Image 1: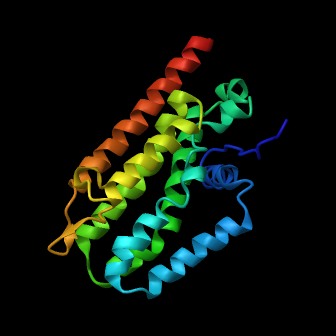
Image 2 (image 1 turned 90 degrees about the horizontal axis):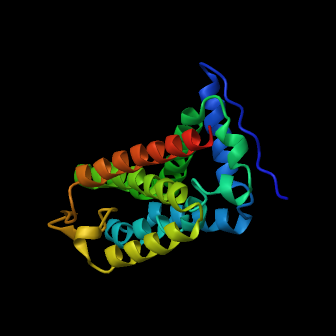
Image 3 (image 1 turned 45 degrees about the horizontal axis):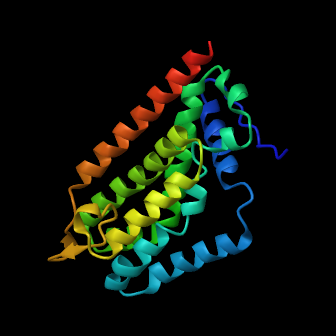
Length: 214
């Protein structure tokens, strides 16, 4: 059976090590070609005209990691270690670290559009970017914990992303649809709030399952 890297939780400064451990778990086995693709997207995002960054690079950078995001909340079940992690003394801290690792990955892959928006003082675009960076891993973690499989997130997210890229404005969580130079989609507060709700839902489901085992 494949094994997961261990992430040791300690009090105080140990949270940083826990986050690093969860990030290592999240990206375990990702090929060099995947990283090369992510690097190419980032470089293109730094040199392309701004309009192309918003229309092409931003959506591309936030669909590229879909297979990695789908690991959030699912690996403990797919590797058969849920019972072990259920006895983890600080299960909520570990879950927060897992979510934070997803946020870090999302920010890293989408860093080029954020830098370009910052350079032109595109504050509405940056707000949409931040909301998207929080929403995507929150959705992945919630669906992973609920379904215990990576497939549900992959199916839902790809369809959602495709709809947003093709002009379904009310589903645009990235800020790629523009009107008058500003994001035309829902307020970033909507997706930011949805991210909070999804994380809370994840905690509730996790607590109910732990209580059911005791």
